[in-house]
Amino acid sequence: MIAAAVAVPGETMKLLRLSSVLLLTSLLGLAGCTAHKPIPLYQLDNGNAEIPTKSQGLAVLLGPVSVADYLQHETLLQRQSDSSLMAANDARWAGSLAADIDQLLLRQLAWRLDSQRTVLAPISPEFKPDVQVQVNIIRLDSGPSYPAVLEAQWRLLDKGGQLRDSQLVRLEEAHSGSTADQVQAQSRLLRQLALRLSEAIEPLRNQPIAEASKPAQATPKPVKPKVEQKPQIPLVAPTRSSGEVLRF
Image 1: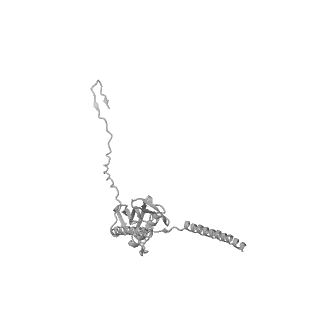
Image 2: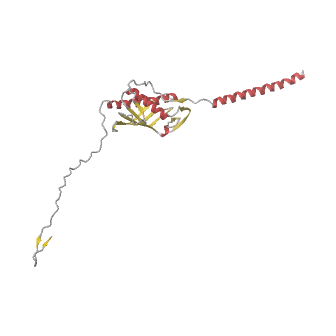
Image 3: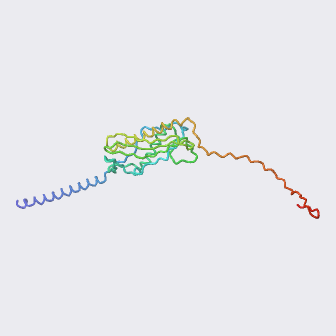
């Protein structure tokens, strides 16, 4: 009876050690899962842009499209209440945001203008655009308690390289605060920009495009014919002397 009573505490210690090992293993496994938690990747939403049907529509060259330096990273930035920007710890862009902006604007313009001849710069020398669209994205960001804001400037050039229209715009879009809804709000702003561009391009569709002006050339003055001059013969002047001498 005494031996049995002494053995019980030893078995209990073994059970306690085993429980501690299992608990530690579980905690380490949980920490490993937390450390390797996948980070969501986001892309801009192109909306309901459809493939254009006209293969011989208006020839539009989109580009160059320049993007502010702070947007040329995979980090998804969050605007704070003091207007500072902080990198999001739980979200990234899926690739290049600048390339995403190019493709969204290209698809939107091609759809709204219904033209397969909408291309992104650079182009081959064989492509002769009717209209060139130059865009500068100055700002595109948002925050959990800050609306999505887009600031951009665009210019329209005709086939002769002449400036036909230009505008500086600032657009805002509200959202619910989540990262996914912020990306949707930024996408809607870019689609609004594409709509404005297509509306500005439409008046250039059927009107004649001004050719590039050439510097006026000076009209050459008429050249007077040269009059052939006859050789002059010196006159003979008689002199008074003792003899008659002819002096030439």
